[in-house]
Image (cartoon, rainbow, N blue to C red):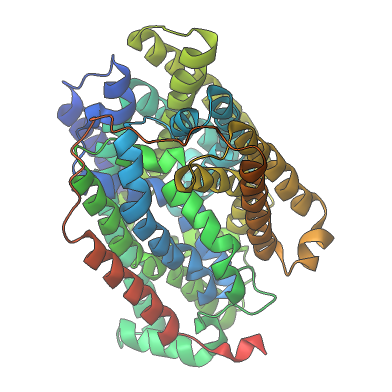
Length: 537
């Protein structure tokens, strides 16, 4: 049966690769706009598909389901609160980004402040990508594939360490080829194709898992059994000792989501490649709608695994292995290969998206701005590609050392807070003020990393503020207040005026505000439906 799994895996993987090549074979990847922004030609289905799959990699499939295995429904906040940030992106941030015609977030900071602010921001992004984001994607990806496809059996390699290193490097090399030769549009197209498979396969895993629990009486009966057997795990309200306590939804968790969906280069690069503001807004809001399905396949499977393996069969398993074991248990052999291919696509999507963004940041923000000002478009692309290979090799070396971290998703989000909060604070001040000077922005970036780092190094400091997420919220307020104070003491003599670059059509989608309001109403309804506030007493 494992040959059937391997065959379906190879068939779907090759099919997506061939379709992507065919659809992008005539693309211009020699110019910076063509390589980094897909020629500003992305339509809303491609934007939504790429945003979704760039986000939905194994740090969610494996990591978030691992957290729900331990803590239950409350960890859905990372999916549901993301919708709030996506609405903010569509209605506030995206119109301003497209008006300036930027390729990177830090370019906006150069326009608003100066090139040295851009350089500091770029260096922060690159350091975070190579030490936090890329290694986490590779590690969780390798873990997920090894469990779903039973790579040990396929290869005959029994040593877990050798298996991990080998899978990490295989994923890294293939992802690098996608990102560094095809450019943004090839990444976006492959994302969209894999995204369809991921949604289908992810929801199918949940259905099959619930049907297994229902023991012949259907998925709904299985859900009822689980709710009766472990009611506390179906509470959307996180207790104070939960990794996502309820109060943190309005502080650190909300801010990290705003960073991720509104200012993170890896994500917003897709929206910057939109053919118009209307297409970009539709793509972002469609992503918000799809994110509302997230708990169904990113949270519920972990809870199913807890009930089936731990409560029913008394097994002791690691949270990081929960999702892979469930897939391996419920998925037919021929479909297991298909789903492994989709998961591989999700891994590659996140990896090559970050790598493409890293090469963009280096090429546009560092090589062309600092190392060789005035260089040609072709030189910029080449420099970005060479740097991308350096980043990939470094990440592939670091990734296996994450082994042994049980709560990988919570670890991932805490480490991200190091640079998330400073960058989102500076971007907000940049867009909402006119006279705050460049020195304030540089202070915000550097001081922000120092303060968030202090919270990680000295847990008692963050505990005194009510926990890590509240601490990040306090850091954000401190940074914004300090930057505004500097702006009052030493303001710029002339106010900043944002110029219209004319890069894209800025006519907004006429239903954007109504769609955004509807999404926020659904977010509120989901929380209210599963809320039990007694855990806060």
